[in-house]
Length: 161
Image (cartoon, rainbow, N blue to C red; front, side, top):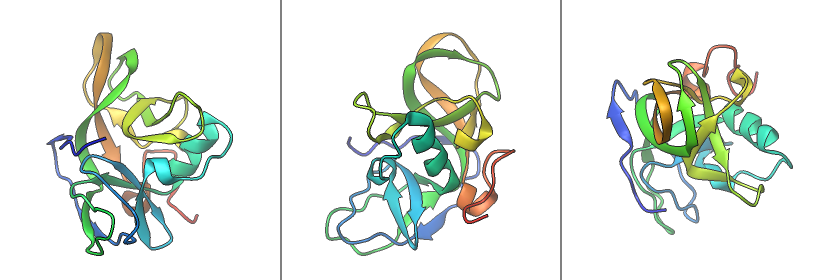
């Protein structure tokens, strides 16, 4: 996926995150913290089911990449830890406050870097719907909450707890 600025409004409370030189991150990617480095959602190892993948990602969710990191780059990147972002999603309707998590690819073996889906419980969530959609839509406004930096969505716990 190519760079896509997904931020729409609200405070982003950015952090500067280290990135391994071999990791490629695009603007708009959902990123997680792997030890001391940011990585895109798709780089998380497969946990054998969509909900297990979503739960593992939510526990280490850092935020949304506001800068890119190309192969070979060693400079830290800016990552938004809060704010409202517009993401692609499977066609669905949404109510304010609905829980949202990272979406899985069609093969069922990896998360998508720039797509989200509704989830059933806060342990899978990285944010909540910020605009009601009573007709089916394929993009949604999501108020994200970094688990690493803010404790995540209500009912979830920070990384390492």
